[in-house]
Length: 298
Image (cartoon, rainbow, N blue to C red; front, side, top):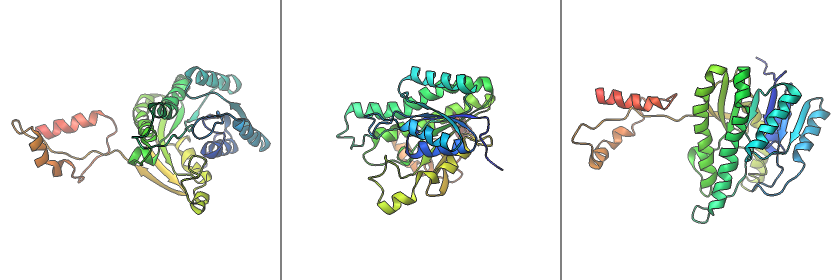
């Protein structure tokens, strides 16, 4: 199988550097027309630059097609305008990679509410805005591929990143609803949890690891997850050429009879509640209620 994006139009947010730039370059190399979106600010979201224009120049120099967009993912109308310009130029939008992000790391005790709000708005609300801006176009086309960017912090936790973790796990949850709503229109939605050496992580990795975790090693997973043959509703981790899947699972659980439904009762059966033998991977929220009904009947 050869993964091609010929005749596809792709939008990549936060594509002025790091992972987004790597995605944009490879999409273009494989035939996509690419909207390179980036404010060009520092990793805390401040400042501006012409980063998107530089990536467009790289793509055009290599024979590809691209346009720069400086809209903020936190401004819905700017995202609507971005999609309109892509459709005007190229007729549609087939791929969206929600990659834009910032960091404002502090322990929760020291974190200002404004830092919590902004990180959640850029990552979670911003991805929601971008997705909403392309959603109707993808429904009309009966084709769409959307990638959310989660993180190990959102999936598993990390000290000093409460704002970032809350946003990133929220994106995995957004995927799990949108894949259901988009299925009848061939819209596939996935989540990527990348580990890469970028300006977001340059003071976290030691120098030798920073080089090993270059963004290009995440690109294969990202592009597969937005390809024609993409799966849907997956959470895939990628870094340094290694790939894995993460799942939200549910145990078989246990039920308490009438008269024993007390905190003490829960404590008594807690080992059964958390026993992972026979755990499942629900494909929708309704499976929780179905599992409870089976327990009560059994």
